[in-house]
Length: 185
Image (cartoon, rainbow, N blue to C red):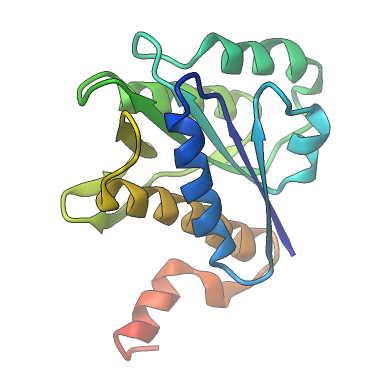
């Protein structure tokens, strides 16, 4: 059973809605248990419990929220060097396109790398014009079907990589699934 944690901060509720779509995507992969936690309620035990982690933050001046930064600086800092090898990804929302969401995702990924997480982006198109190279991004509330699809794909890919790399379930590898759909596998 793969264990996925979707950890988020959300002031307006927009990033929280993204977290729910990411959780839906992760749950689409068999034998996956998902927990969704606000940074206000999360504990170190939640991070230790998971094998795959999606971290989301509203974009604050092109960076992550102070609450998310504080969680890693103060709550998780004493556990540094004890999280190596967990798989992680990022997501962010902002008030407008061009508001720095991808930079915020890069900030999250940099933070996670410093804790020893193995981070990834997604090269597949989630929908027309929607890629997730640095993570899933949304302008305000994730209302558009394309944005919702990108969140679901990020969660799905996190659950797939966890199934493959933690549990050895090679049948969940995205490339193998593509080959099977195309009749080559």
